[in-house]
Image 1 (spheres, rainbow, N blue to C red):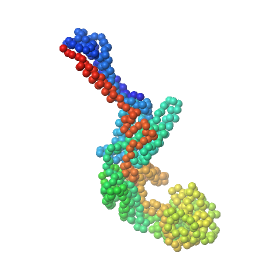
Image 2 (cartoon, rainbow, N blue to C red):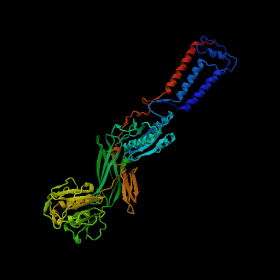
Image 3 (cartoon, one colour):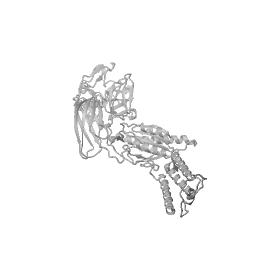
Image 4 (cartoon, rainbow, N blue to C red):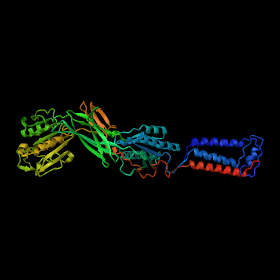
Length: 615
């Protein structure tokens, strides 16, 4: 199939042919000419010797030759393209990668800027060739969206491409391919009445290829390739923050340990400076240096923080990507854990209360089972089975869950038992010495399976003796005996068990810092008690929710390493190539028309020069 730009070719051809005909009709007085040959110019010379300036047009071989030359030049101006694989109304999909790594700088432009230029060049070439494709523009990072669907207007398509902006999110280009497959299948379904005839989609994916692991992406109903904006470009090396964490020391709550991991994209010696900020004030700074082959460095920075802070960590370095040079971690207040013990008559086991007060670093409140529970982070039931659980984590000794039958409460403790198996990998019972504990059962716990949120941590011959039930966001731990019915209270394993339980059930209260990335959905409880959620977030930085400032970071090692993969085949890849239109199915023909016209002019001139003699 041959495509032309018909307007330019038609105008040039019409003007050229008109001038040739006009010249042949115009008779000019000339001096006598003697012609030694009559090959092409004899009739023309006779016409020039006439005394009548205008005469009726007489078709000659020379006239047809000159008209043919004009037509060949007109066809060259039309810039014809032969394309035997591109049908009229072809669906073309332009996928623009907007992940964080596409914002890497090269000279005075980013990867996304260059990708948009490449996409616009291909759109212009499509329309300049006389084609009428249906173009869809897709923006893809962590989330995929259709910027413009099925448009045949060049201006709208170019405007849609220019409107795309980069994000600070990791890439997920497989979702873009799935979206195109769905659109193709939906289009085929709509066209089942033969009102629409769809061919295979032609896909150009403008990406650095960092999120793609395979050299070929399977695709139904389409073919194409990736086009890398970094092809042939030497990128500036990049150093970025790839992980961050913070926690308070339980023994010394004012001590905060900030963990930072820094990665890079190139080899060789390199250095940077880590700075820790509270707002605009620098708390501390530290220099780091990479050895020749090292790709990452981990640093632990100790800080004394008497109150909760949103810490900002910055890298002072000149590199290709700026989004990964900042990260945030919120360190909570060094507040004590608020624990309430519910016991019969408000008289709890003294050893249990003493251990809980050491862990909580404050007095423990002890209440009767009929008293309300106020301002507590954790409730410990000592020989009490509540009718309903509070909306906070709980621990129970000889305590039943509300869903259990009261028949599971034993009238009198059973015979001495020992645990015969336990989950040694679980953080709660690990190192708690449960294998040496002997006890007399007070309750029977159920094993309802993980599908009901129940998890068994330890068993004896009668069934579960330590289990955990997850209800929504809260975890409820149950032990099937009272402490005074066991020897656990005099063993070192009990405080270890309680410390592990508090850390697992209350990770935030334990001083663990909060870190959010651009991939997270952030949820907070609003002033009206309703949950408010936002995310994923497009950009790194500080946002405000319900009056609370939250730092959002990139922290993605793949994006920071700036990997470049080119010539990734989509589908079979037979309908496109990384160069654009230079494949065997797309050939520009204007050069051949120009060459033929020039050859005819040369032949005509040399023959005339050799055969004509002026006297």
